[in-house]
Length: 354
Image (tube, rainbow, N blue to C red; front, side, top):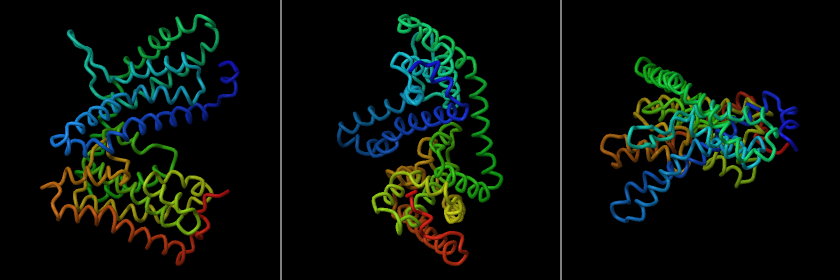
Protein backbone atom coordinates (compact mmCIF):
# COMPACT_ATOMS: atom_id res chain seq x y z
CA UNK A 1 0.00 0.00 0.00
CA UNK A 2 1.45 3.35 -0.95
CA UNK A 3 1.62 6.41 1.26
CA UNK A 4 -0.71 8.24 -1.13
CA UNK A 5 -3.42 5.67 -0.50
CA UNK A 6 -2.89 5.78 3.24
CA UNK A 7 -2.93 9.55 3.18
CA UNK A 8 -6.35 9.60 1.48
CA UNK A 9 -7.84 7.59 4.31
CA UNK A 10 -6.06 9.60 7.02
CA UNK A 11 -8.29 12.04 8.91
CA UNK A 12 -7.16 14.88 11.15
CA UNK A 13 -8.44 12.94 14.17
CA UNK A 14 -6.47 9.82 13.18
CA UNK A 15 -3.38 11.95 12.53
CA UNK A 16 -3.56 13.56 15.98
CA UNK A 17 -4.34 10.24 17.69
CA UNK A 18 -1.38 8.53 16.02
CA UNK A 19 0.96 11.33 17.07
CA UNK A 20 -0.27 11.44 20.67
CA UNK A 21 -0.24 7.66 21.03
CA UNK A 22 3.30 7.47 19.68
CA UNK A 23 4.32 10.27 22.05
CA UNK A 24 2.94 8.38 25.05
CA UNK A 25 4.59 5.11 23.99
CA UNK A 26 7.98 6.76 23.50
CA UNK A 27 7.84 8.62 26.81
CA UNK A 28 6.74 5.63 28.86
CA UNK A 29 9.27 3.28 27.23
CA UNK A 30 12.08 5.76 27.77
CA UNK A 31 11.23 6.93 31.28
CA UNK A 32 9.97 3.83 33.08
CA UNK A 33 13.38 2.07 33.36
CA UNK A 34 14.93 5.18 34.93
CA UNK A 35 11.90 5.91 37.09
CA UNK A 36 11.81 2.37 38.46
CA UNK A 37 15.51 1.76 38.99
CA UNK A 38 17.45 5.03 39.22
CA UNK A 39 16.78 5.80 42.89
CA UNK A 40 17.41 2.21 43.97
CA UNK A 41 20.62 2.06 41.92
CA UNK A 42 21.87 5.37 43.33
CA UNK A 43 21.46 4.00 46.84
CA UNK A 44 23.12 0.64 46.08
CA UNK A 45 25.88 1.77 43.68
CA UNK A 46 28.39 2.59 46.47
CA UNK A 47 28.03 -0.98 47.76
CA UNK A 48 27.98 -2.88 44.44
CA UNK A 49 29.46 -1.43 41.20
CA UNK A 50 26.97 -3.35 39.04
CA UNK A 51 24.23 -0.97 40.19
CA UNK A 52 26.30 1.94 38.93
CA UNK A 53 26.39 0.30 35.50
CA UNK A 54 22.62 -0.28 35.60
CA UNK A 55 22.16 3.39 36.53
CA UNK A 56 24.19 4.43 33.47
CA UNK A 57 22.07 2.15 31.25
CA UNK A 58 18.68 3.42 32.43
CA UNK A 59 19.91 7.03 32.26
CA UNK A 60 21.04 6.46 28.67
CA UNK A 61 17.61 5.02 27.84
CA UNK A 62 16.04 8.21 29.22
CA UNK A 63 18.21 10.34 26.93
CA UNK A 64 16.89 8.45 23.89
CA UNK A 65 13.27 9.54 24.52
CA UNK A 66 13.08 11.85 21.43
CA UNK A 67 14.31 9.02 19.20
CA UNK A 68 11.83 6.60 20.76
CA UNK A 69 8.99 9.09 20.30
CA UNK A 70 9.83 9.64 16.62
CA UNK A 71 10.07 5.91 16.01
CA UNK A 72 6.80 5.13 17.83
CA UNK A 73 4.92 7.87 15.97
CA UNK A 74 6.27 6.69 12.61
CA UNK A 75 5.28 3.13 13.50
CA UNK A 76 1.71 4.26 14.23
CA UNK A 77 1.57 5.64 10.67
CA UNK A 78 2.80 2.26 9.34
CA UNK A 79 5.85 3.81 7.68
CA UNK A 80 8.51 1.64 6.08
CA UNK A 81 11.98 1.45 7.72
CA UNK A 82 13.64 4.33 5.82
CA UNK A 83 10.65 6.59 6.49
CA UNK A 84 10.64 5.54 10.14
CA UNK A 85 14.30 6.32 10.78
CA UNK A 86 13.95 9.63 8.92
CA UNK A 87 11.15 10.72 11.25
CA UNK A 88 13.11 9.52 14.30
CA UNK A 89 16.23 11.43 13.25
CA UNK A 90 14.33 14.64 12.50
CA UNK A 91 12.50 14.38 15.83
CA UNK A 92 15.79 14.05 17.70
CA UNK A 93 17.24 17.07 15.88
CA UNK A 94 14.26 19.25 16.73
CA UNK A 95 13.99 18.07 20.33
CA UNK A 96 16.78 20.32 21.55
CA UNK A 97 18.48 17.43 23.32
CA UNK A 98 21.84 18.37 21.77
CA UNK A 99 23.85 21.46 22.61
CA UNK A 100 26.54 22.40 20.10
CA UNK A 101 29.68 24.06 21.48
CA UNK A 102 32.89 25.04 19.64
CA UNK A 103 34.66 21.95 20.93
CA UNK A 104 31.98 19.30 21.41
CA UNK A 105 28.35 18.23 21.09
CA UNK A 106 26.75 17.81 24.52
CA UNK A 107 23.64 15.75 25.28
CA UNK A 108 21.63 17.97 27.63
CA UNK A 109 18.83 15.53 28.45
CA UNK A 110 15.55 14.74 26.71
CA UNK A 111 15.09 18.18 25.20
CA UNK A 112 11.70 19.87 25.08
CA UNK A 113 8.91 17.31 24.68
CA UNK A 114 6.43 19.79 23.25
CA UNK A 115 8.90 20.75 20.53
CA UNK A 116 9.68 17.06 20.04
CA UNK A 117 5.97 16.46 19.42
CA UNK A 118 5.71 19.36 16.97
CA UNK A 119 8.85 18.31 15.07
CA UNK A 120 7.64 14.72 14.78
CA UNK A 121 4.25 15.92 13.51
CA UNK A 122 5.94 18.01 10.82
CA UNK A 123 8.28 15.14 9.87
CA UNK A 124 5.32 12.79 9.43
CA UNK A 125 3.60 15.37 7.25
CA UNK A 126 6.71 15.74 5.06
CA UNK A 127 6.95 11.97 4.63
CA UNK A 128 3.26 11.73 3.70
CA UNK A 129 3.60 14.57 1.19
CA UNK A 130 6.60 12.96 -0.49
CA UNK A 131 4.97 9.53 -0.44
CA UNK A 132 6.56 7.11 -2.91
CA UNK A 133 7.63 9.79 -5.37
CA UNK A 134 11.34 9.20 -4.72
CA UNK A 135 11.02 5.46 -5.47
CA UNK A 136 14.47 3.80 -5.53
CA UNK A 137 16.17 7.04 -4.50
CA UNK A 138 14.28 7.19 -1.17
CA UNK A 139 17.10 5.65 0.94
CA UNK A 140 19.53 8.23 -0.47
CA UNK A 141 17.38 11.37 -0.43
CA UNK A 142 14.49 10.99 2.02
CA UNK A 143 16.46 11.20 5.32
CA UNK A 144 18.21 14.36 4.14
CA UNK A 145 14.99 16.09 3.06
CA UNK A 146 13.02 15.10 6.18
CA UNK A 147 15.82 16.01 8.60
CA UNK A 148 16.69 19.35 7.01
CA UNK A 149 13.07 20.48 6.57
CA UNK A 150 11.49 19.06 9.74
CA UNK A 151 14.55 19.16 11.97
CA UNK A 152 15.35 22.67 10.77
CA UNK A 153 11.83 23.90 11.54
CA UNK A 154 12.07 22.20 14.92
CA UNK A 155 15.30 24.02 15.76
CA UNK A 156 13.76 27.30 14.64
CA UNK A 157 10.70 26.79 16.88
CA UNK A 158 12.69 25.52 19.87
CA UNK A 159 13.51 28.84 21.62
CA UNK A 160 9.88 30.01 21.41
CA UNK A 161 8.41 26.68 22.57
CA UNK A 162 10.89 26.48 25.45
CA UNK A 163 9.78 29.89 26.68
CA UNK A 164 6.14 28.78 26.59
CA UNK A 165 6.70 25.47 28.41
CA UNK A 166 8.88 27.15 31.05
CA UNK A 167 6.20 29.81 31.54
CA UNK A 168 3.52 27.15 32.06
CA UNK A 169 5.66 25.37 34.65
CA UNK A 170 6.39 28.63 36.46
CA UNK A 171 2.70 29.52 36.34
CA UNK A 172 1.76 26.26 38.06
CA UNK A 173 4.45 26.84 40.72
CA UNK A 174 3.28 30.42 41.31
CA UNK A 175 -0.32 29.30 41.72
CA UNK A 176 0.80 26.78 44.33
CA UNK A 177 2.48 29.60 46.23
CA UNK A 178 -0.72 31.70 46.13
CA UNK A 179 -3.33 28.99 46.81
CA UNK A 180 -1.60 25.71 47.67
CA UNK A 181 -4.67 23.78 48.88
CA UNK A 182 -6.81 24.75 45.89
CA UNK A 183 -3.99 23.97 43.44
CA UNK A 184 -3.29 20.67 45.19
CA UNK A 185 -6.92 19.68 44.63
CA UNK A 186 -6.97 20.89 41.00
CA UNK A 187 -3.74 19.10 40.03
CA UNK A 188 -4.67 15.85 41.78
CA UNK A 189 -8.16 15.81 40.26
CA UNK A 190 -6.82 16.71 36.80
CA UNK A 191 -4.26 13.92 36.87
CA UNK A 192 -6.83 11.41 38.17
CA UNK A 193 -8.94 12.16 35.07
CA UNK A 194 -6.05 12.36 32.59
CA UNK A 195 -4.64 8.96 33.64
CA UNK A 196 -8.05 7.46 32.79
CA UNK A 197 -7.89 8.92 29.27
CA UNK A 198 -5.62 8.16 26.29
CA UNK A 199 -3.45 11.16 27.25
CA UNK A 200 -0.18 10.47 29.09
CA UNK A 201 0.19 12.05 32.55
CA UNK A 202 3.93 11.45 32.31
CA UNK A 203 4.06 13.35 29.02
CA UNK A 204 2.24 16.36 30.48
CA UNK A 205 4.27 16.45 33.70
CA UNK A 206 7.56 16.15 31.85
CA UNK A 207 6.63 18.64 29.15
CA UNK A 208 5.90 21.46 31.62
CA UNK A 209 8.65 20.42 34.08
CA UNK A 210 6.15 19.78 36.87
CA UNK A 211 8.06 19.43 40.12
CA UNK A 212 7.75 19.95 43.87
CA UNK A 213 4.30 19.68 45.43
CA UNK A 214 2.69 19.91 41.98
CA UNK A 215 4.41 16.64 41.07
CA UNK A 216 3.41 15.07 44.39
CA UNK A 217 -0.23 16.09 43.96
CA UNK A 218 -0.19 14.70 40.42
CA UNK A 219 1.17 11.40 41.70
CA UNK A 220 -1.55 11.14 44.33
CA UNK A 221 -4.19 11.87 41.68
CA UNK A 222 -2.89 8.89 39.71
CA UNK A 223 -2.99 6.81 42.91
CA UNK A 224 -6.66 7.76 43.41
CA UNK A 225 -7.48 6.59 39.88
CA UNK A 226 -5.59 3.31 40.25
CA UNK A 227 -7.19 2.52 43.60
CA UNK A 228 -10.67 3.56 42.42
CA UNK A 229 -10.57 1.35 39.33
CA UNK A 230 -9.18 -1.55 41.38
CA UNK A 231 -11.88 -1.36 44.04
CA UNK A 232 -14.72 -0.82 41.58
CA UNK A 233 -13.60 -3.47 39.11
CA UNK A 234 -12.71 -6.14 41.66
CA UNK A 235 -16.28 -7.41 41.84
CA UNK A 236 -16.85 -7.85 38.10
CA UNK A 237 -13.44 -8.18 36.40
CA UNK A 238 -10.76 -10.89 36.61
CA UNK A 239 -8.35 -10.35 39.51
CA UNK A 240 -5.42 -10.07 37.11
CA UNK A 241 -7.04 -7.18 35.24
CA UNK A 242 -7.88 -5.38 38.49
CA UNK A 243 -4.32 -5.79 39.76
CA UNK A 244 -3.04 -4.46 36.43
CA UNK A 245 -5.15 -1.33 36.93
CA UNK A 246 -3.72 -0.95 40.42
CA UNK A 247 -0.05 -1.78 39.89
CA UNK A 248 0.28 -0.99 36.18
CA UNK A 249 -2.03 1.62 34.72
CA UNK A 250 -5.75 2.32 35.26
CA UNK A 251 -5.96 3.18 31.55
CA UNK A 252 -6.98 -0.43 30.93
CA UNK A 253 -10.41 0.54 32.32
CA UNK A 254 -11.01 3.06 29.52
CA UNK A 255 -13.66 0.86 27.85
CA UNK A 256 -15.80 0.87 31.00
CA UNK A 257 -15.26 4.60 31.51
CA UNK A 258 -16.35 5.43 27.95
CA UNK A 259 -19.56 3.45 28.47
CA UNK A 260 -20.27 4.94 31.90
CA UNK A 261 -18.18 8.07 32.56
CA UNK A 262 -19.86 8.68 35.91
CA UNK A 263 -17.84 5.88 37.52
CA UNK A 264 -15.02 8.43 37.62
CA UNK A 265 -16.85 10.49 40.28
CA UNK A 266 -15.54 8.46 43.28
CA UNK A 267 -12.03 8.78 41.84
CA UNK A 268 -12.37 12.57 41.58
CA UNK A 269 -13.61 12.85 45.18
CA UNK A 270 -10.76 10.70 46.48
CA UNK A 271 -8.22 12.64 44.40
CA UNK A 272 -9.47 15.92 45.89
CA UNK A 273 -8.79 14.61 49.40
CA UNK A 274 -5.35 13.35 48.42
CA UNK A 275 -4.54 16.68 46.77
CA UNK A 276 -5.08 18.40 50.12
CA UNK A 277 -2.86 15.84 51.83
CA UNK A 278 -0.11 16.45 49.26
CA UNK A 279 0.05 20.06 50.45
CA UNK A 280 -0.35 19.29 54.17
CA UNK A 281 2.40 16.65 54.20
CA UNK A 282 4.55 18.42 51.59
CA UNK A 283 4.58 15.45 49.20
CA UNK A 284 6.97 16.32 46.38
CA UNK A 285 8.37 14.77 43.21
CA UNK A 286 10.19 15.43 39.96
CA UNK A 287 8.99 16.04 36.38
CA UNK A 288 9.89 12.43 35.58
CA UNK A 289 8.24 10.87 38.63
CA UNK A 290 4.99 12.83 38.31
CA UNK A 291 2.29 10.79 36.65
CA UNK A 292 3.44 7.35 37.79
CA UNK A 293 1.52 7.18 41.08
CA UNK A 294 2.83 4.28 43.13
CA UNK A 295 3.52 2.11 40.07
CA UNK A 296 7.00 0.73 40.64
CA UNK A 297 7.06 2.77 43.88
CA UNK A 298 8.14 5.74 41.76
CA UNK A 299 5.94 8.26 43.58
CA UNK A 300 6.70 7.11 47.16
CA UNK A 301 10.46 6.79 46.57
CA UNK A 302 10.72 10.31 45.16
CA UNK A 303 8.48 11.69 47.91
CA UNK A 304 10.78 10.25 50.59
CA UNK A 305 13.77 11.71 48.78
CA UNK A 306 12.45 15.26 49.24
CA UNK A 307 11.32 14.81 52.85
CA UNK A 308 13.37 16.37 55.61
CA UNK A 309 15.52 13.63 57.11
CA UNK A 310 14.89 11.15 54.29
CA UNK A 311 13.69 7.63 55.09
CA UNK A 312 12.99 8.09 58.79
CA UNK A 313 10.33 6.06 60.59
CA UNK A 314 8.03 9.09 60.76
CA UNK A 315 8.43 9.85 57.05
CA UNK A 316 7.84 6.22 56.07
CA UNK A 317 4.66 6.26 58.16
CA UNK A 318 3.49 9.38 56.31
CA UNK A 319 4.20 7.72 52.94
CA UNK A 320 2.24 4.58 53.90
CA UNK A 321 -0.60 6.75 55.19
CA UNK A 322 -0.79 9.05 52.14
CA UNK A 323 -0.04 6.55 49.36
CA UNK A 324 -1.80 3.43 50.72
CA UNK A 325 -4.05 3.68 53.78
CA UNK A 326 -5.97 6.88 53.00
CA UNK A 327 -6.30 6.21 49.22
CA UNK A 328 -7.76 2.75 49.86
CA UNK A 329 -10.02 3.95 52.69
CA UNK A 330 -11.20 6.91 50.61
CA UNK A 331 -11.54 4.81 47.46
CA UNK A 332 -13.72 2.25 49.23
CA UNK A 333 -15.86 4.92 50.96
CA UNK A 334 -16.50 7.09 47.90
CA UNK A 335 -17.24 4.08 45.68
CA UNK A 336 -19.71 2.78 48.30
CA UNK A 337 -21.28 6.23 48.71
CA UNK A 338 -21.74 6.86 44.99
CA UNK A 339 -22.96 3.33 44.19
CA UNK A 340 -25.22 2.43 47.14
CA UNK A 341 -26.40 5.80 48.49
CA UNK A 342 -26.37 8.14 45.51
CA UNK A 343 -27.13 5.36 42.99
CA UNK A 344 -24.93 6.92 40.32
CA UNK A 345 -23.96 3.53 38.87
CA UNK A 346 -24.01 -0.21 39.55
CA UNK A 347 -21.11 -2.59 40.14
CA UNK A 348 -21.56 -3.99 36.60
CA UNK A 349 -20.68 -0.61 35.12
CA UNK A 350 -17.03 -1.34 35.97
CA UNK A 351 -16.99 -4.37 33.68
CA UNK A 352 -14.52 -4.14 30.81
CA UNK A 353 -16.54 -6.60 28.73
CA UNK A 354 -18.61 -5.07 25.87
